[in-house]
Image (cartoon, rainbow, N blue to C red; front, side, top):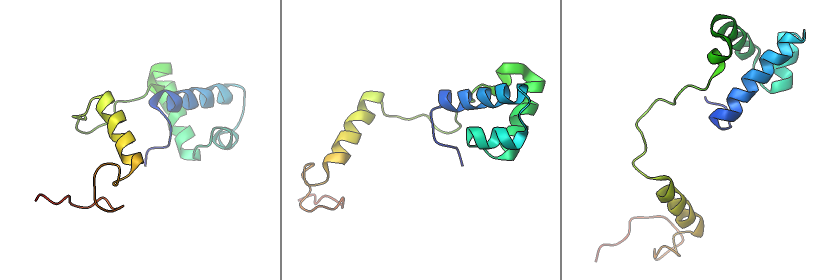
Length: 100
């Protein structure tokens, strides 16, 4: 499962981990400091050793690209947060809208 945070935030966490390792901290200390697993820190160290800072860059997320624009996503979020009644549904439940 992907950790919480933007791609940029996660990349910064990996960079911080490497910087801490460079100061002599142990893998366990670094994992605790950046909120990652021991195995993740070992993986990041290996990626850094093989590819340098580029090895820690965020990778594109796999999957189909969204068909909604950023504006459409914002509008949808606002609609969802207002609830089904505000969207014209007869009850407070998101259920199939009658097509009479």
